[in-house]
Amino acid sequence: LNRRLAEFGTTIFAEMSALAVRTGAINLGQGFPDTDGPEAVREAAVRALRDGRGNQYPPGPGIPELRTAVAAHQRRWYGQLGLDPDPETEVLVTAGATEAITAALLALLEPGDEVIALEPYYDSYAAAIAMAGGTRVPVTLRPSPSEGGAQGEGTFRLDLDELRDAVTDRTRLILLNTPHNPTGTVLSRDELAAIAELCVERGLLAVTDEVYEHLVYEGEHIPIASFPGMRERTVTISSAGKAFSFTGWKVGWVTSTPELVSAVRSAKQFLTYVSAGPFQYAVAEALALPDSYYTQLREDLRAQRDLLSEGLAEAGFGVFRAPGTYFVTTDIRPLGESSGIDFCLALPERCGVVAVPTQVFYDHEAAGAPFVRFAFCKQQDVLADAVRRLKGAP
Ligand code: PMP
Ligand code: GLN
Image 1: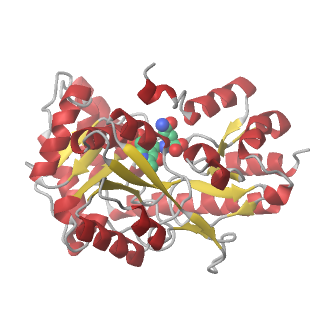
Image 2: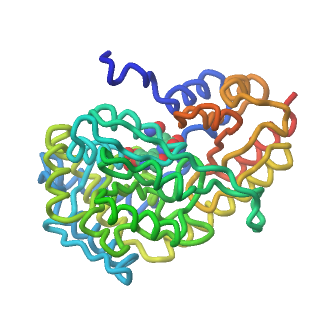
C-alpha cells in the first residue's frame, strides 16, 4: 500500500460491522436502515432488470430519466431558493455519494492544494483528499451547551473565526457536510451565509455533501449552492441511499454548473465509467414519490431518534441533540469513561451493542476521544432492546 493510503487502514464501518457479526451484538455502528425502502421502488428495479433496461452500459452522465428526476427534485425542494439545474448539462449520476466526493476532489485539486473539512468528518473525506494529492485542514466543530429543546445537552457548532483563520493562499475548496455525519448537526442559515461569503471573498470552491438533506428533524436544510455567488462555485452531492433507504444500491448524483459537472465527469469516467443501470430507473421513480413519503420517513426517524436519545440519557450517557442524520453523539465521561475507542471495543462483550468511536473522524484526536456515535436508523424494538442492554451493562 502506498504512502498516500497507508494511514487509513480498514474503514471503521467495516471493522465495527464485522465486530457486530462476530459477537452477535446489535449493530448501532454503521449507518444503514434495517428495513428496506418502498416496495414500489424495489418493484421498479425488478421491472427494469426484467425488461432489459440498464442491463448494458448506461450513458456516462446517467440515464436521461434519472438526470431529469434529479433536476426535478432540486427544483421541487429548492426551486424557491433559485436552484433549477439543467438535466442535460448540470447533473451527473455517480456510484453513490462516495464516488461523487472522490471524483470531485480528483477533478478539482492540484497536488498540494488545501481542503478545509469540518471535523469530525465522514471517513472517506480524508482518504479522497489524500488520493487527490491534497492536504486536509480540519476545522473542529465544538460541543456547545444547551440551546433548549428536548433532546439532550447541546449540539456541535462551527466556530466561524476558526474557519476564516484556516483559509490560506493554498486553500482550494471547502468540503462541507450538512446535515453532518457524525454529529447530527444541521448548519444554520447564518452559518451557511458566512461560509458562502468566505468562499466568494477568497475565491474558494465548495463541495457539499448533502446525503442527509431529507433527514432534518429540527431546523431546515438549505443547500449552500443557493447563496449569492455560490451556484457557480459549488458542487452539490446527494444520494439515494439515505433518502430512500437503499444504501446498497449506490446511486448518487452531482449537480453543479456545466463546467464543474464536466470536470467531475472527467474523473468519474475513469473510476467506474458508468453507474449500475437498472437501479437508476428505480431511483428516478423514487425521486418522484409524493411529499407524504418524505414526511413519513422523517417522522419515523424522528421517533427513533427520540427513543434512542432518551434511552441513552437514562443509561447515563451525555447526549447531544441530533437535529439531523441517522446519528446521535454521546459523551461517555458521565459514565466514568474517557476513551471512546476502548469503550466501543469493549461494548459488544459488556452488553451486546456496537457503536462507533467518534475519535476516528478527527485529526485532533484528543478533541474526539470521549465521544461515541450511535445510529438510530433501526426499528423501534431493536432500539428499545439496545437501550435495555445499555442500561443493564455492568
Ligand atoms: N457522505 C456521508 C456524510 C455519509 O454518511 C455517507 C454514508 N452513507 C456517504 C457520504 C456515502 O454515501 P453513498 O452510500 O451514497 O456513497
Ligand atoms: N455512512 C454510513 C455511516 O456513517 C456508512 C457508510 C459506509 O459504511 N461507508 O455509518
